[in-house]
Image 1 (cartoon, rainbow, N blue to C red):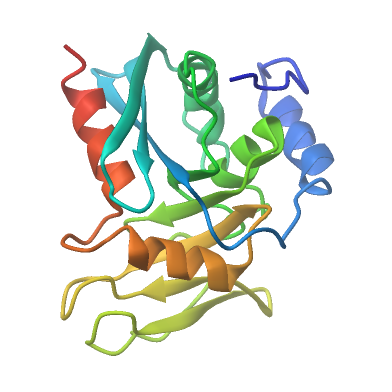
Image 2 (image 1 turned 120 degrees about the horizontal axis):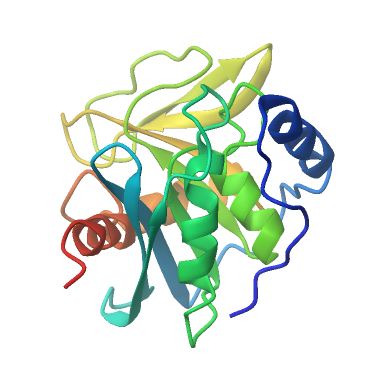
Length: 219
């Protein structure tokens, strides 16, 4: 698949923030609510800077694998809160470009609107690819929320600066919630529904779980 090169990779905090500010206006918060091929994306670090980016495409109906790719690289940017995506984007883009199929939805291990600059990894990858994208965080990042009820499917809004930027979602009964936010071309309702569909047994969506495993064990 093809990923648009909308900007050079930044080398400074100011450049990175400028990229986020410029691309944020391209985020769309409406889109389809059904998907045939769903891709999970994750990155595993080997030491401080060496990393492996993995993309696993599943059939959305059966959760059977369709294609798996990896790309090896080095962190492309220092660790700066709110700019973490720039460390991983080049390797993730390289992995996406190795796909022979084009997924209908990107499920990112990270955040979308639930981000200090309202432009997390899921937003960035969505804009670069033009594909619907959502973020699923393992821990809260920005904003406040009440604990969701104990049952599977319970959720509460994540509110940041007076706006709803995501949901704390219980994917398994009495298991810690995950933190869902829109990335691009998807509504929050659709993002929530997809995360539940993709978590039939475990806390994290199956595409992300498999991408995590592939990134850790690429051979």
